[in-house]
Image (cartoon, rainbow, N blue to C red; front, top):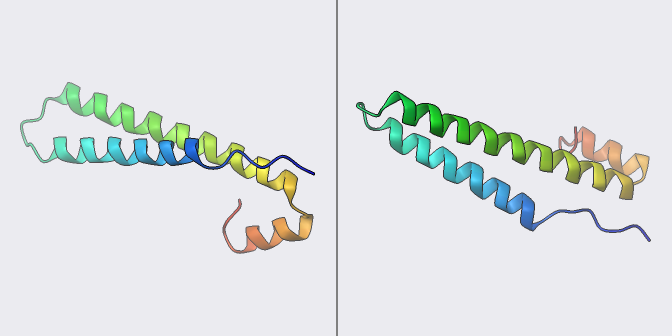
Length: 83
């Protein structure tokens, strides 16, 4: 029996972090006098959160591939659920 892929809590936390960072940047941009340095900092934080989420997704997809048959993987790729 294969171990289960690492899906769940970390992925949800990464998505929550991306959402939070997006909201923070969006809120800051509503202020036309927002300091450039704050915009840079929040933009950087959002990019880092997105990259972390992408890495975690890639790891989870790789773990999932190890549990599937080639046919199952092909179906998920055709349906856009795996790259």
